[in-house]
Image (cartoon, rainbow, N blue to C red):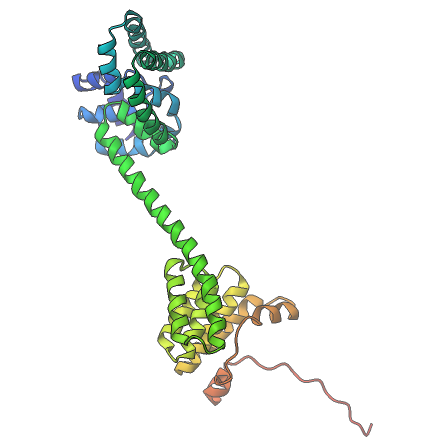
Length: 350
């Protein structure tokens, strides 16, 4: 794949690629970057697989100079070209020729002239804005746009593609970035809303104990919290307890399984598996309950007695639920942990 890409890049550019280069006129750092690949794809010279490999390389985005891309976008803007035609200034025409010469030098590999090119483009736009108030207002809006786009490495890379002549490809990238940003914003808003809902649900639990709310009303609040932010262990624990209180054991089992899945430490895992055991006992699945209870104790193995007591103290015992070994009958006793031996008492008569 690399050999194909190398051979293609060293081949003589086509007429289509020449037009793209003349519009953009430079390559970052004097090296062939993703912009060259985009131009060659436009002329049909690069395989699709090679394009994907070149675009996925993180170095291509990292090599883009945001300031240079902003300056190039402002210089090549249609508003700039229209204002230049209206101005017909000799100094501007001279500066324009200087910019084109610098572009040619940068294109031929003289990377040291890249900073000079950027400075010249910025000087050209500033000089034009000083002579044309309408253009100054118009280009200020466009400047804010391209600066915002170039504020991230991905946006700067998309702007580089736009400047290189691949406007549609750049717009597609920016659309994808916007979709990703929207999803992130929605997720952040959901988590913040869940945090508020969690605090309100905690008060709702207190109101339930005073007889002011029903269990179903509190459940609705915790269901909303877990829908907005499903990654909090203790939300699922509380929801599982509430489902058990109304006898909805299938929903309770789903909730406590989610509690075990979202556990972030040994204590949370212990609580989650213990809650699973409680629900399975009430459903009559005693072997499954025994397995869950054993899992709830597994994280505490090797810990001190006080640590084990601390881990298991967060579970809420159900007085109506018998111990799994006791309820299972004689067959289950063989698989139950053996009780610790009692100390021998001394004979009082001795």
